[in-house]
Length: 282
Ligand SMILES: [Zn+2]
Image (cartoon, rainbow, N blue to C red; front, side, top):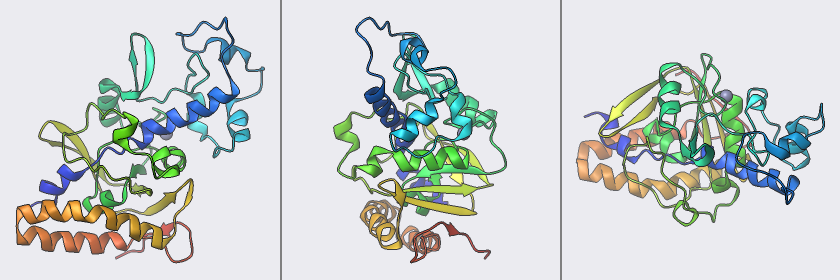
């Protein structure tokens, strides 16, 4: 049977990318509290207008202790509060809603190979922001990004920065395009940037997921920093019971196949010294 058959259903749109920008926006808010006469609702707006000429939003973000905003993301428009608006963000009644992915953008990213976050052309490398169990299933619910854009997302996603956060509590809407598969309620606390040259959009039931090829690099993050091997192992172990439940439903062959997939995923764990795991040729 195809691994994708049941593991594809376990693919979770972690929402990290969407939440990334929400988190960034909140930090901008602290810096750009809107004046009483601020007229919101149009892109740009008073907050953007107050930016002194020649001072980029990046320098402000850096003062907030955020990782440096990747060059490609600096061209993103700002909303009325000074928020950079990621490419995928939908506009509801003309206003960007950071929690909702635009279905047309989703399709554009697939067909024109654009970055999910910055919207510019992808190169040969595709980076997925995923949770540990996606390293087993090798599927993602969100389109790929540039490596730099993905790393930025993985470092500031509140589900990683604050492991106590939970999707359910947060009211995070599910990506409208994500397949209605099994949702994990646990928060692994660890995000992975999976860098590959080989990925493919695949239709499953009522949605689209992305099948990820062999990684050339993997970067594991926890609480905004690189995760160590023990943290990654612990995070994956919290997600495995749900995967094995699905495999058991499929039968013994699926369980054996999952065993193999788990072992394969551990090859990309960080080494004992914290750092990027560089994939070795087979
Ligand atoms: Zn990008």
